[in-house]
Amino acid sequence: MLQGSRAWAPLGRAVGWILLASAALVRPAMAQDSSRAEALFNEGLKNMQAARYDQACPALAESYKLDPLPGVLFTVAECEAAWGRIATALGHYDEFLRVLTTLAPAQQKKHQERRQIALEKVAALARLAPQLTIVVPAGAPAGLAVKRNGTPIDTLSYGVATPVDPGTYVVTFEVPGQPAIERRVLLSKGQTVTVGGDVKWAGKDTPATVGSAALPDKADGGASTAAPDRTLAWVVGGIGVAGLAVGAVTGILTMSKKSTIDSECPDRQCTPDGRSAVDSAQTTGLISTIGFGVGIVGLAGGAILYLTAKPPAQSTPAKGASWTPVITGGNHGGMAGLQGTF
Image (cartoon, rainbow, N blue to C red; front, side, top):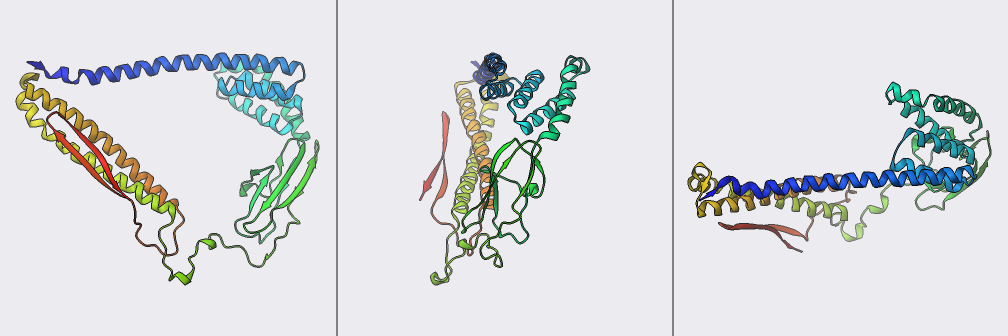
């Protein structure tokens, strides 16, 4: 006779080994990051003392990224300030002061001298940082995108004086279907510049219509299929439904084994038929769990794709992919999957 508890022992051992392996992997990874961070800090400090700031500052920043110690962040700010990257240094000093407020009083006391230096540097650099203001004239076409040195600017930043590092900046105004408009400015310490006020677009009286290119041509009778993203949404959602079906059916199969287990495993002592039923229940139970997981993820993903897709002018039912759950089961295990047609 076999004890029923032994039927579940392999699962317990597997979970235990997974947890132990995960813990064993995390500790060396953390130690490796700490060692790498220390090496980068020493390298950065050496280059900083030699005034090789273009090598020092990136190394120090990477060291802080691997091991975020307050002292390292302060050194990053000092390096950026010495390099002349005023606005970047200001941001790091401010972040250092913010981090200090999260430390225990005893830890804050250790950084008291650095805190005082940071406060003085912030006050001094704030007067030296160039200010760049990007404005967008009223009546700008729809779909306008503004970039600064290739980086998109949030609309909330329009008209706001922003501290930047000294140097050359290229502000680009891009409208779909029109040539990009550029404004190049050179900012030095303490300088304030505003760009964008003189920008004009062709056809200003007729703002561009977002998504107008997606409208169907009436010559084809207005018929169109679902947009590609929505087609994908239907497919992903179909997989989700199939996953739930697999989970439900295999869950029922699992529950159907309960009576056999109860009758063939009295007092947790299993006959061969009882052990077979336990094994089968474990298999179908695992498939059921996976099926429900796939179903939930599929439905959620399908819903997100559907809601974020650009709606077509006229929709017809999406055709193409279809999915059918395939499930087999028996006393010695089970199998579940999806059968697709395209």
